[in-house]
Length: 326
Ligand SMILES: [Zn+2]
Image 1: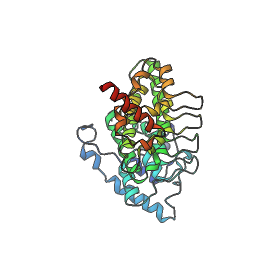
Image 2: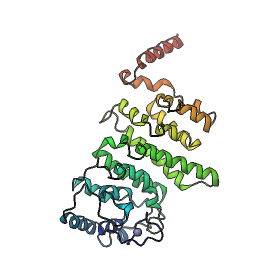
Image 3: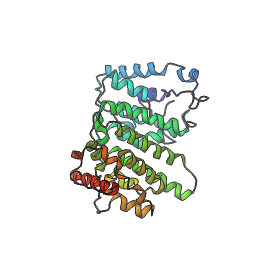
């Protein structure tokens, strides 16, 4: 294969050997997912991983540095190698680069100041969609699983990627994913047909939230998690304000989040126009904002120090509980 799934149809560019050898890496999937397409004999044929490693070592031998862009003819792919491997979903390559070759997970692209995770959320779905690869019949769960593998590898190395802002519109990976979810939701609303793209983005959004929440009590506190989701982009919106516009699918993501956190506090955050996330749900999916006010039960588990002013709410809650008891 001489082109990438992200190339335009009439692409005539001669891509760098590292990029073409990267394309030849095919993800391995369990037999439960796409057994017929990804049978072991087809996947292991040709030992593509060794060829990719050989090309990377060849490039390094020319004096190329790991934090520099791959010297590629197409401007679109003049990116660090870790970014390219990540956005094409080649998790075996990502694993090898991070864990054996010590590439820096926090590295930014020179043109847009984006991390590898920004590019995963921006391009991965399209990269897995292409008809020019053997991935066209990959199920949505297999695609989401591919997304999870790449994100997990990056995050394990560098947890701050969750809240890293890009140099384009000060967006975190959550903003970009939220915009894709919203666009897919609007496309479905226009066509009236249930769309795979929408399924991918709603499942992926839940997946990345799960990965973020899983960091609680490990490397991140509840406060860190809340802050990661409270960042405003250049338009003054948090990712949740964008998600809230995606009608039913946005609502489902928000429902999952408040249920997991046991708190609706994040939905009371205001954007630059002084609208809360709940205001937007009310506007875009009327009547459902009430369902997002979670039972305050979950608050009992929280450390009051994480919420400025919440100690008072907690005491009030206990008192109201006592009043109800008697
Ligand atoms: Zn091409």
